[in-house]
Image (tube, rainbow, N blue to C red):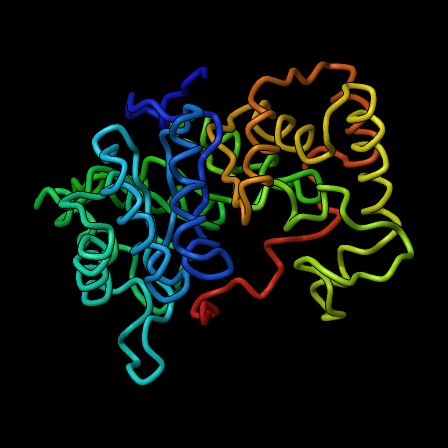
Length: 333
C-alpha cells in the first residue's frame, strides 16, 4: 500500500481511512473488532471515530480492538469533538474550552490510550470564538494528549481563518480538513482544494460513496426497502433524481468495463483526485470492507475522468451535502 503524508506533518497514512461510526452501533462489538483487525492487516493504518458516535460506544470498541491486537503504536488514531454528549446538560456540546478539554479526557479513557494522533473539531460553530477553540486545542497538544488537530465540514474561509488566527496568536495550526466529497458533490474543488494545496492541509473526505448511493444498491424508479435511504425523508429524496442516477449510470458502466464494483470505482476516483489524502470508508460489514479495500489497487484514467465530468461537473453539486442538516448541535445519535 502506498502511504501518503498527512498534509505538511510528514506523518504517513494509508490512502483509505477506516471510519468507525458504525462500530458499537449498527455493527456489534465483536464483528466491529474483526473489521478493524482485517483493515489493519490489509495495510490501513488510519482510523477515524468521534465521541458522539453511539455516544462513546464507537470509541470504546476501537479502544478494545487496538488493545486486543496490540497495534495501537502503528495506528494514526483520529477522533472528534463537538456533538451533544448529554441531553440534560447544555454544556455537553460545542467548541468551547470546557467541552473540548472534558471530552478529550473522556475520549482518551474510552480509547484506552494516553494520546490522540488527530483531534478534530467535528463541525464549525458561531457560538464560540475561534481563538477559544484554538487555545484549548493548543493546550492539549502542549500537554501531550493530542499530536495534531483538524476540522470537519468547515467552509474554506473558516479553515483559512483558523490558520490566520493560529499564526497571529502563535498557536499550533490545523493540519487537515474533513469535508463531504464524492461524485454527487464536488464543490470543494472550487476553493477548499486549492486552499489545502497552498497551505499544506490534508483532505479526508467523508461519505465518499454518498451514503451508499454510489454503491449501485438503488435503482431508478424502484422501491427502497433497505439501506440508509429507505425512508422518504426530504433529505433522502434529494438523492433520487434523474441527475443523480445519470451519474450512477456512468459509474456503473465504467465499473463494468473495469470488472469492478461501482463502489470501488467511486472510491478510487475520490482517492485519486488532486489534493485528496484519504477518503473515509465506513463499512458496516466485513463484506463491505473487502469491497472497499479493492479500490486501492484501481487506476482511474484521464478518459474515465472525462466521462465522469460530463455528468458530474467539476466544482458542482448534484446532491448538496453542505446544505444538509449537519450543522452545529445536530449530533443526537
